[in-house]
Image (cartoon, rainbow, N blue to C red):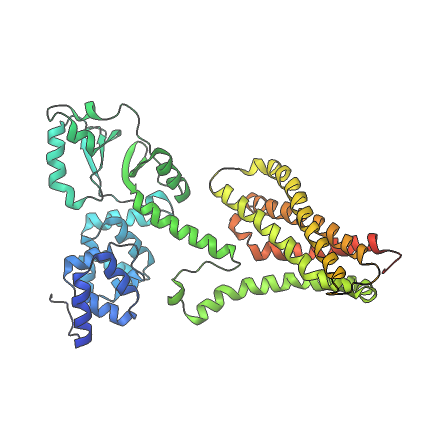
Length: 454
């Protein structure tokens, strides 16, 4: 217990004792399930070292609000003891005047470092980097470097990547791993044990996707952020994992036809949830009105052949499903850089025959369904049931082909005009294909059923 701890009731004290004995990841998970007021009380009652460990976990929900609720002296002390990248994350989410108050209470060197990180665009390499890394001059020996690592290891994000800089210019020369130092001769030069190649680096403005791609490609634990040859900080693999989870979550939300949530589902307020979902639903609803307009255009045909209405849901869903499949595949391929904007015509050439084959498969299934129902007396489609079956089969070929082609091209179009391809959500594609699907269906019906039902 410390000087900042408030008086807790018996239940809160009991919970605090349980939390204090758990692994820090379990503590964070438990705190995330507690009401905000209870979580603040528990945090205030914890030993300071434990508090630092908890706030250093990216999984701690509402960390900025919890930090702001702490007494100002304790919050400032906490930010000083935390890793620099996590402190920057918390300060970035705080509103004024809390941010300025906390920054003003920090030591000038730390304040300068944090302001520098906060000055970079969110999502860039410099905005998620840490300045707590191991760097040594190029004229040091292996033994001296190991002695230095022993002294500073508690204050560094990682000690498994060591960066060698020019003593005079501070330019990054080489990088090496801890294993090479341990197996090297203590009297050898640090440069002699480092791999003889230029380190893989990124610029301060490199985006998160390219960061993740570089770390995966070169199998790195950390990636140095370099500006004009000088190392500013490093981005570790755990930071990339955390940011990519956030990015993937946003894409999944958008692909479901809504704005990305900025809080966990169960923490999201009712009005905030309505705000995130209502806009897209209204846009999709207005788009679906075009479906009603399309059906009104064929009102006469529907009056003559009511049986055609039985297959409208089947036709619309098949086109939407094929379009959603194609959209999902292309969006993921674009995200993984398996394809680029210039490959749109290759994708079109693949999706066109794919759509024809898939449509033919569904067309055969549809024809068989109508035939079986007619022969077994489950439903009477009338004297021209063969033509109705042919209409459904031919329409499915056209609609599934159009759905596959349009669904695969939409992400390219969005990316070309500067939008996130994930905005090509499944509901949006389905809406687009619904309208065109009806037009294709009734156009095919007019050709096949002319002179009989129409």
